[in-house]
Length: 77
Image (cartoon, helix red, strand yellow):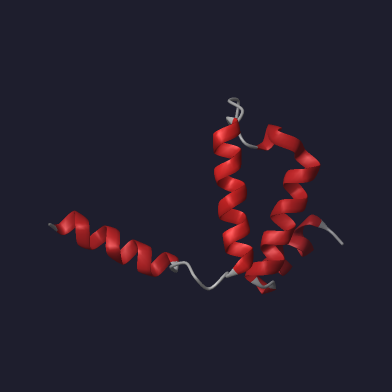
């Protein structure tokens, strides 16, 4: 499968499937994909906790549309 074919298939995947792919890519790339500054232990713990919470209940959060609407409302005040 070519890179173009893979990229074309990504939007068809479920959110959970894309999250699994992101985790695998992060595993393959190590911490180097993040940026030049490595995460602190506290930041890593926070990310792990939030990922665990998401995996426990993926529907608990807000959609981007909801978040954007809240931000826009706050900016209008």
